[in-house]
Amino acid sequence: MAQARNAGVEVLAVAVNYPVANRSEVPLRTGVSLRGGIDWRKWPGIFTNLLSHQDWLCRFLANGGMPAAESWQPYAPPGSSPTDILRFFATVWPPTLVWSDMESIRAHWRGKLVIKGLLRPRRRGDGLPAGADAVVVSNHGGNRLDFMPASIDSLCEVRQAVPEARPLLFGGGIRRGSDILKAIALGVDFCFAGRAFLYGVSAGGKAGAARAAGLLRDELANAQAMLGCADLDAVRRDMIFTPPPEPGRPA
Image (tube, one colour):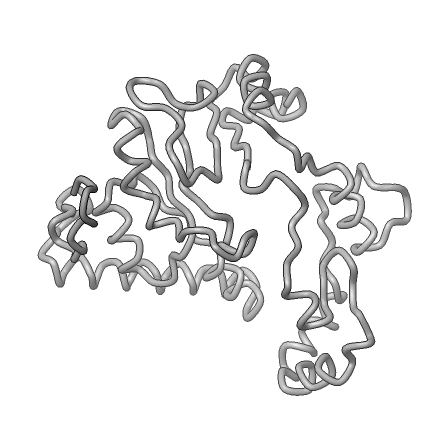
């Protein structure tokens, strides 16, 4: 936090997405992991994948192969490979955050504090958990637990708990521009999109990321036009379909 403050950072976002290390099934299925590298016991599937994406493979090799987490490189042991750096990062990642830790961070951080990864409100009224200035509703991709709710399914409940004057941010499941409009209609102030940009970067680097942003922007503009909304301030909740409330639960 001291380094961030000295570098001029004004907003600290703390991810509280999961309390223990993630056990993703993707590396088990594909044989490829950022932390563990390549499991050559899965070589038939790996080679089939590589040969079916020859253009991507050529660009991957031409750019030096596995990318490194360059922001962590100065702290890793000298001579660390990209995989070594990621393994080092995994050893220092704090997987056991509890609310008292967040309160300690709030006490030491004078700037804006954002908590990312909430799916249920912790407090109602004029306060936010751990004195945060904003929260991000997010289930971190939904792959941390096989029965996690979708981020958007938790959105309305969190919105009711967060004061209107405080920003409510949203991440998870944004696949097209109309998804942004839906989230805004349910009370979000800002949306994050991750996978679209990852796909764009994987396909075309910086230009691919710009292309992904352009697609989302065009799709959002089209959805606004279909609803007759000149700007996002005109988007209302009753413009999107919402199912009837469950018996015994308020609308």
